[in-house]
Length: 70
Length: 147
Image (spheres, rainbow over the protein chains, first blue to last red):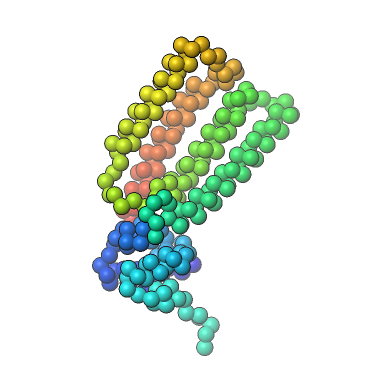
């Protein structure tokens, strides 16, 4: 899985650390780190919680553009 | 998100590690039975099962700690050092109390396991402490690297 740099950028734009975001959505910091590194595929509930905290949409943070799309 | 218990990634990890540890336990017990059937006795009856159980439980806990799936997210940030210390002391006191009561009540030992159970438990406890210390140090280092 590819790294989720958009999540990292959105978090940094809000001036939040991984720990801050983890506490806001009720998971461990390791889970946020795993999502950003592409090591863990979060459930839709966690995606929505993250989006709400960061003020973004699911498309902004988690939609992967199809590389083969013309 | 729930603030009690483990988070979703930790639950997935715990389930996966638990399944693998259970299968490991099953295969080791089967292997032990096969060895017994072939006439190979590497330990007496209760001791062999106890050792296999302790091994699998140890592997399960170590893998859980290594995967960061042992303690769930908690809103409190203070380190539970005092709590851990009190737990260790109370466990030691409880074990000593059980031993004294069992001795005074004249309860029989466990037969063949009695010979090696003490050193096995002593070495096991020492190894567990060593592994816990190494895991604590590596976990802290990894946390610093990831920040």
